[in-house]
Image (tube, rainbow, N blue to C red; front, side, top):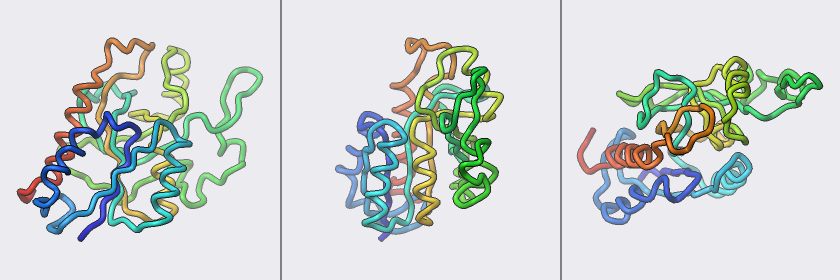
Length: 226
């Protein structure tokens, strides 16, 4: 039996999948991860890097997992991505980890030389998943983890230029680092709920993004072989 850890910031983002597990648990045998039975642990971490790091430390200190999946919604910097589209995040960066200069510019923690950007688990200042799922139909994207969701034009432009990321979340980098540090196989799956733009939540498609994410998850652990 394979043990799977599902990591999510809020219950809302994964509620349909949890209901599916309750109804179909005894029938799940096949998935993209092979033909076997599955034991699931659901970890609702709470929003943000600190909550995610804390919960991942607890999770991975007590159990070994065949794979950990971080799932949820994300904002898109890259306009090629469509609202409701499901992506696989293959690298993560910390957006807010560093220092602000007197002129308002930002130095990240690697520019400050407080962390070696090529010392494990980092590679060229990034956290990289070298063994992604590469699930057909999912775009592979570059992630950025923020503690403040971008909503001001100048901040958005500066962030785009500095990090060249496709999507942003508030948890991904903590999840990546915990998995890399413990050699836990992992993947981060994010559905696009909004574009990173001047803040206007009326344009966000949160409900549709959550539905798409849960449909995808259920399909991966359906009783039919994929």
